[in-house]
Image (tube, rainbow, N blue to C red; front, side):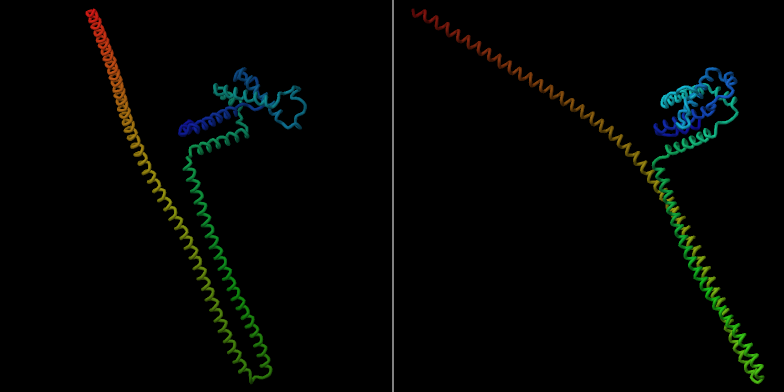
Length: 389
């Protein structure tokens, strides 16, 4: 029922037909998954359960499947004939198997009780390849439905959105890599400076130790030489030792100051990195907000466009009706003008004919009068001649 409703949601007739064909194919495959493959176990039990006619059809189906499997095998695996008999060619066997499969599907669809009996007879589920094929076919059917129900604009919008997100992520990654590179360079520079300071301190310590050793040796030598100069040398040593200790203290203070400066520099760079990340997030948020605003504007423009389009269709329909009425009125006037012209032409023809008839009648009357006059003049001449004689 859910699949039928999904097909009904499609507005395109071709898409509905495609989904209906896929749904019918899936149902047929699901029915065929309950038919035992290649060999039928418990033939007697199946005969009692589903009847001899259906069992015969299933046995023919199993036999054709075995023959098809044997014919489809590589020539190296085919040894002799199939059970001592020669099978038809691949195309003929393929047509027979297709026809038998359609018959089995029709029987199973017309009698659902047979499917239930087969399920009760065979407690095992469909084979793993068949189950995997049905699951894959179902996924392809769902993907086809999603593809058919998705418009070109939505598909293009999703693709543009994915490209924009990818570009934005790539830009953020480049910024992060650049910041990490700068931090690495700063850290390496700081480590070099600290290493140089440590080398200087170690060198001063070595010099101090050397000075101490030299001073001790000189003290021993002075003590052995003379006690008179002991106080003077001791004072010199203490003075020099104090100077060196002050120098050491100064260097330690300088080292501590450098460490503090480097720590502050590192903290500043870390804050700068966090600030840059915050700015990147702010720009991303602003970009998303701008895109949402643009989307709302586009939706508003589309609504305006739809209203104007509907108004345009209304006006076009109105003007079409006016044009139709005007054409009808013009046709009626044209018809009246043609009728008037025909009547005028007919009247002119009748007038012309009447004129011709009048002319002919006048001519006839004139000729008749002339003949009478001629006859009268001849009679008068005859009478006068007789009198002369």
